[in-house]
Image (tube, rainbow, N blue to C red; front, side, top):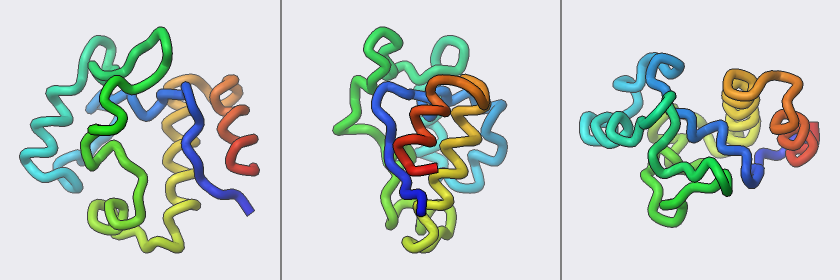
Amino acid sequence: MATWRCVQQCGACCNLDPSDRPGLELYLSPIELELYLSMVGEEGWCVNFDHTTRKCNIYDDRPRFCRVEPEIFQDMYGIESEELSDFAIDCCREQIEGVYGDRSLEMLRFDQEVGI
């Protein structure tokens, strides 16, 4: 059984291009949407993503919408905690494929880490 986990130095979720994420206003509050849009930098990447280290510069203080936690996913997407791992895996695979490709090193590393 696959279990979601964040793969270090992936950063696919840090590609925030709003054109790739339709309906942001459906699950972000107006204040969160404003913050989200303010974080979108060059070529759609988060301004807090360090491309050299491939790490978030504000990880410990990142916004709610950047966190994969049961209560947040329940509130934002209506996902029950027992569904979180499968949902998060699907989301990550879709994002990794869109950013790096379905045969990328990032996808291979993610699939290995989660047990696919």
